[in-house]
Length: 110
Image (cartoon, rainbow, N blue to C red; front, side, top):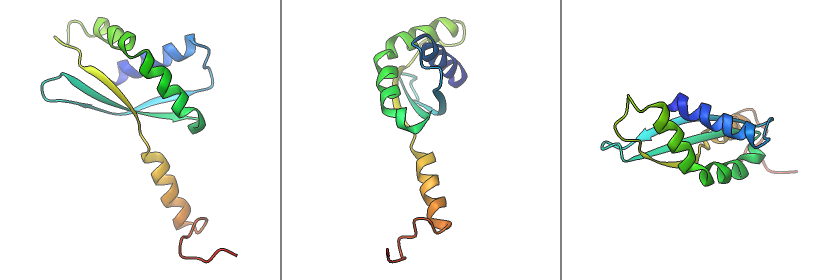
């Protein structure tokens, strides 16, 4: 499902003219009863992440419909999608900057 969702989102972004944006699905958490799926997205460049998320959320029902068509013989029911931004890469980047001394919170600023 993760691969199919990524392909559908990339196709939708290309048809809307967003050629320089890369969206990857980092995680998909599906509830036990398959009624809800939380889909975590990573967007590059990060400055566009909120705008891209807004577009993806607005086309969520169409994305779900395309996934239903693609997986009609595999899934009896397609879960409702909730899209969220995955900020783990930003968190990791902040840790790396701190470790390299670029943003050391213990150093006094000159």
